[in-house]
Length: 515
Image (cartoon, rainbow, N blue to C red):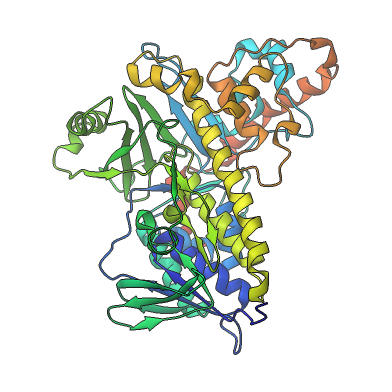
């Protein structure tokens, strides 16, 4: 039995996944202190970070705060803006224009008091979309307002929020902070080879400029290449291309026409004939991309569709095409190596799950990496079980958007074909036809998308739900009070909250109060 201590971790690969993981590990291990577990990161000087304009989840605020990064420094460094959810445009129908919001804030936590049955039965359900009935945030986002004021504390707001950010600049911020404040050691080199020990674990990483590097534990952040867990250790890849059909993206960075151009407060996702277009506003530009299936549209046609969406501003701009390996590793942790980021899995970026699941993996690694090698197998089993569940549930949630669409193009007809919908999602949809979404449908501690998220998509997409026993819902007066409170709060926040651009200008000039 191995009783040696784990005293060193080597993260292979940079970018958001590598640097966020290294920073999290170093912060948790107190690696800046003498005698602490060391964290080293190897990053190739020849592989640039793919920066397309990224969306995050509200969890990012806690992550940045934990790492000791000031919110105003982060916003300035990453051309970041506030994100208050996602606006889905034309997902319901091909011919009839329409939209709905998946928001971050509701007036009532539905696991405590579920307003949905009352919205379905009351007159407010005829007059207001679900999102507008249960949250002020959709109206605030449509107006381009920020979720907070300059007088709010860092990482606190009047509404829940996440960020849009430049992934390349975010990785650079993390890189500098991890080295200067958290004790991460950095090696700039290309990986030439991975050597294995007799038991199949990683023995060393061979580089071109820094020789052979060894550690007690390794984190594979080498992207789709998956040099350690995949190529060297032979852990297979499980494709879900038969469930999620989109397999490519074409992206264009679009500068704002003026320095005071208003900023979107949500990610915009606009359905197209063979996929959808994301539109993310940063302070200096928009990140715009078309996620599509090459089986239903050619690469050139997809690029032309993206350029039409952008308009005349796209004429002089370069486009970049990306191939997507949609699926996940058969294991995410094997022996003395765990994969994080694209090395572990990738599903299309519809709900900005990529960075969130990097955060989740880094958090669990920091908490569960054992002090002794003899306990690695137990930690491996827990990690693999947790992330298999998380990725499968993420796939279910993304597939939900397609399964509910009424668009008629061949891509959309294929995407919602019953045989391509996971049985777990089919079962939930069948149950929800006659009874409300329940907290018990999401009882696992590692649920990536909560009950609230499902309700925003279900009712936004026009899911038909006929409650089998409406007499069960006897708190109509309490529900009416909440619905009225939403409208009052909406009017109040419209008066109080500044525009995104206005708030960011103040933050750049003054920062947030330290108190």
